[in-house]
Each structure stands twice: as C-alpha cells, then as structure tokens.
Amino acid sequence: MACLPAAPLALRRRLGLWLLVGLCLSAGYALEKKVIKGKVGEKVGLPCCYEIPSSESLQNYRVYWQKNTTDVVLAYAEGKMISTPKNRTEMNKTNLTLWISPVKILDSGPYQCVVQHLRFSQNSVVLCDESVTLFVTADFTEPNITTEVSTDSCELTEMVVRCSSHGGFPKPKISGTLNNMSVVWNASWVSKSSLSPYNVTGTLWLNVTEDVSITCSIENDGFSKSTSLFLKKTNECVVPTVPPSYNVITASTIVIIVFLLAITLAARYLPRHVCSHCCKPQDSGEEDVKDSMKPPLSSKVTSETSSV
Image (cartoon, rainbow, N blue to C red; front, side):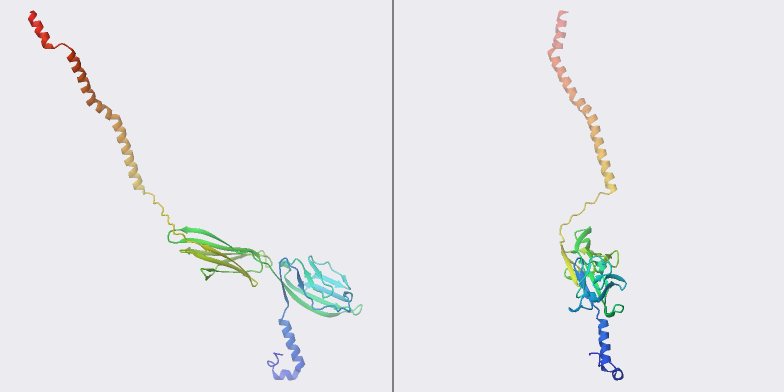
C-alpha cells in the first residue's frame, strides 16, 4: 500500500483501487527473488511454490524441477518419476522440495518449480511456476603468511611478505593491517572457471626498521578468516670485511718474495763468512801448542856453536 500515494490521481481513478494494489504487489514480488545459500558438502533444499493438500496425492499432479529453464533435474507425473534424476537429488512428495546432497559449486544457478494439476486426462492446469536461485559457497583455508628477506642491514630489513589462501568460493577480498593501520595487499586470484574454487595471494614489500605486527584477512560472502604474524627487528649488526685492493695485494706479494730471497741468500753465504773468522784462530792455537812441544830454536843454535 506504500506505493499508492506515489501514483497519479488520474491513474487511480481510471484503474480503480483494486487494480493499483495488484500492480504494487506484482512489482514487489518481481523485485523479491528467492535465494537459497548453501555450503559445499551440505544438504540443501529448494522450496517449491506449491504444497499438495493432505486430501490429495502426487498422482493428481505433474511436477517439474528444472535448472536454467531447460535442464530437467526431476520430473513426476501421476506419482511416478518420468525422468532420470540428476545425481545427488531427490524430491519430497508432499511439499515438493528439491533436495541436493552433497551440494557442489557447480550446482549454483536458477531453478524452476512447475506444478500442474491433472483434472482431466487431456488437460492440465498450471498451479505455480516459480524460480529460486541456489548460491553455493566454499570456505577458504586459514590464511598463511610467509616472509622472504631480500636485503638485511643494521638500519633496516627489506622483505617480501605473502599471504595466501585457497579452495574458497566466491572470489574473496584480501585485507590486513600493519601495526594496527590498514594496508593494501597486491592481490592476485586464480580460478579454472567462474564456478571453480579460488586461490588468492596477497603480496607486500616492507622496509622493516622496527618490530612489526601484520594481520591478513580473507573475506567472502560475509565470512572472514584472519592470521597474524609478528616480525622482530634485531639490533645485531655484522659489518662485512672489505677485501684489500689490487695494489695492496701486489705490494704485499713483493715484500714476501723479497723477504724469502733474503732468507735464502743469508742461509747460503752466512756459514762461509762465519768459518773464515772462527776457524783460523782455532788453527793458530793448535800450532802454538805444537810449537811449545818442540825444543827451543835458540838452544839448538847454541848447541851447534859450541861443538864447532
């Protein structure tokens, strides 16, 4: 009734109050579509637009459950199944609910329930023809955060942080915080088709100068999963040794070679020089000893003179 004041006065007079109410209800019905949500692996029921009264039986009806208006899922006529049912499907024979178990992502889409009453053998009356949409979701795994250090120094650490999750549906959003401040991930999604699970990966490039707390969240269809990681910046600093230059290496090599040559020459010529000074005094000493053992020359000369 809320749409009555918005209608022009001439239109209300022309069509009458009852017709305008019908238009409003029809418009509201068209905007309100039935959507049934389910998760992968669960048992999901799609309601039909008609329920068989307790005074009657399924034998008086013809029921069609079809997907995308062309693909027949189940069909009954006069209480008997007249089509090969799709795998994992069955129908309640009273309220005509279509059950799918276990439901898969590929089961998503619009379904239509058509009910006809068999009043006469040749004619039938359509009691309802209504569609319902099945939307199947799948949970993502817990986000996994990994880090890879590209550059490390005393002042800062450059690293790549990745957050990944897989196996969910529909396409998710990835968000997070860095020290309780919102951060934007560079996200990428992988899926084989529009009705296949998604794998998502978010990447951050950070210059870490202090302790950092990172949170990664995966969100889809109103559900969220989060993981946190704490990175501690250490104060240990290792100064790398600078290799000596080419000139320093050359000069050091020349000094070592000269030193080795000097030692070699000294080892070859020093013993001769030492013997020339130390061995001769030893020989003269021995001669002195020998001379002392001989008779004095003057005595010999004196002796020979007296005999003459």
